[in-house]
Length: 102
Image 1 (tube, helix red, strand yellow):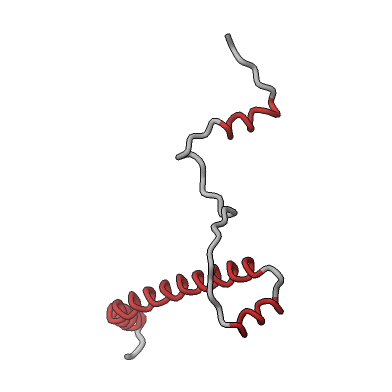
Image 2 (image 1 turned 90 degrees about the vertical axis):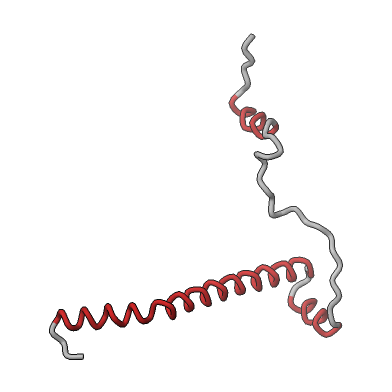
């Protein structure tokens, strides 16, 4: 026997039959937590935005993005520093080839 599923329901059926491993993490899942903040900081947050959780989430995400960016920059700077001698030699070789005095 062949089961015929209407087109509009096929997506729903596919979503319902996904295994646990096939489901992707949903960033909208929230976990309740408690944070202790100085009173003056809390007042500033309340003046800025009515939803404290949203404000703190945005601030934490921004901080983590900035930290990741800083780590990448530091890593890039370390690579450039390590290879600086090779770059200098290659640049001198190119200048010599083009006939420029050192």
